[in-house]
Every structure is written in structure tokens, then in C-alpha cells.
Length: 241
Image 1: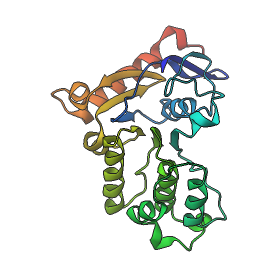
Image 2 (image 1 turned 180 degrees about the vertical axis):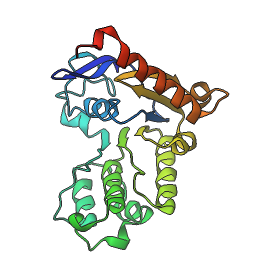
Image 3 (image 1 turned 135 degrees about the vertical axis):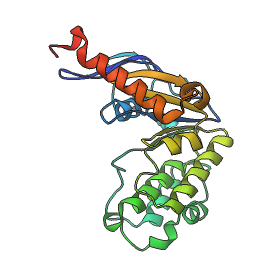
Image 4 (image 1 turned 90 degrees about the vertical axis):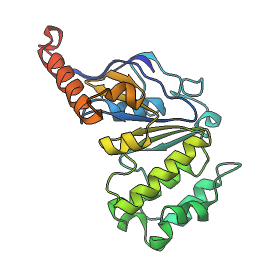
């Protein structure tokens, strides 16, 4: 993304957002609620159209991209977007048919513990169980890029550990993994690179060491976000918006 802008009426969700993610790496995107993380992910996956700037995913503008392009991109959104009346394994088997070389559905389901609730419809799953199904749905097509919006939210420690291991393995196999998170521990554990977004702008980008510096990621994050939010709220240009 380069200088991406997005407005919703009088609200500026993205204000010249610039960042990138590389193949074979995990890029963790951090920021307060309302910072623009989900908007950025939805633009990168072609679900929203930016009002300005340039977006390229695998060399293609995702807005109106072809089916061939979309087949190369995995997406896990906050709301899941899962059909409610289907059982998890049937859903994953159905999705796998859309790709020529999908992942092994049984192996992926076993890895994420989905077999434990395979007879339960999506509507009756717990939040953590839905997260695991949504993650499997995003990865079943062996994407070249995967956008995962808070994939470990609501998971117990064992499931979280397995999800982290799976994300790391996907990146090591060459996939560009983009993970939004509110967890400093998760970012430090997973990330090759970090992007911190506040008020629709990237206030820091780089490796964990480059962003965290000597103070550590948590302290640096609060210093960055507090300073950026203060600037946004006191900016004369924004005073009447």
C-alpha cells in the first residue's frame, strides 16, 4: 500500500497509509481499535475500494481483480463470514474444491482441533471454534498471501500455540502472512516485521528489533500510539471534522 486514503463520510479511516509485506515473512499489524487495520485488510483483499493511493497485492490491484488472483489470496476476517448451517468439515471440503492443489482438509482440521467439533454446525460453535474454522478456510487453498484478522483471538493457550506454529510454517514455506493483532507477545513471537497503525497512518514499520528498540515492543507501542493520537486530536486540520 502506498499513500492509501479511505473516507466514510466525515471520518478519515486511512490517511495516507503506506506499508508492505514480503513473501516468506509474517507481518504483524498492530494499532488501537479504530486505527484502520481492518479497513486496510479489506482494501488489500478487494472488499473495499480506496479513495486514493495505490494498492498492489501480488502485483495486482485487488479491487475488481480476477478470480485467478483471488484464488492466490487467503482471507480471515473478524466476522468470519462463514455460512451458519453447515458443519466445519463439509465446509472445508467444499472450499477445497475451488483450488487445483488444496491442502489436505483432514490434516488441516486435525492440526487445528476441528475434528473435536466436526458434527456441530457453525452457528453453534464457540467463538474460539469459529476462529479455527475461519483460519482453516483461509489456508485450505494454499494461498501465496494470507490476511488474518486477529486469528488467535478467543483461543485457549494450546490452540493459540498451534495457530502460531501453523502461521510460522506457512511463512517458512513462502507465503506472505499478514496478521493483525492486539497482543505484544503474539507479535514478538511471530513477526518478522511489524507495522503500527494509528489514526489511519503507519507510525512505525520494520523488524521487531527496529520497532521495539531498547524499550521493548509494549513500551514503544504505547509511546508511539499516545504521541500519534495526541497529534491527531489536536491537529488544526482535523479540528472541524
